[in-house]
Image (tube, one colour):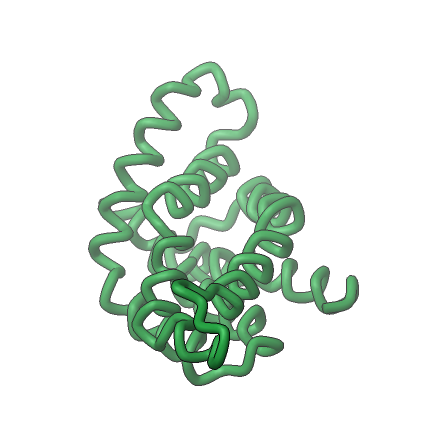
Length: 169
């Protein structure tokens, strides 16, 4: 994946939250910048590496047929859900919080972290059916080279869910 594709898709990540901000009528430039930083610093690198690892993961390797022991559809789907776990969501929620309160809110860092962890856990459980179906489609129906973009689209949908969960949970 080239740098242009990585940067383009990384900039798409905050778009889901931006849509949610408009739906909730609470636009914040700092929040958008915070999530853009998160996408550029982490998501654009982590997600493709994780998907590549899931695609190549082999257990109990058989010399005759190495494909026979690769992760099946359920293993890859669960593997994707393991990546997008409550701690991943909590990190996303933390950056939403940080963007809302500004960096002066770091004085209440413990409270921000605790609230983010609680919201991450609740949001993970509430959105698990959507996440399972979406990750199944991304991991099983898309070729490896299209999974990152598919994940970006799914994450945009999930970002809207996370932002709404942030507001109502």
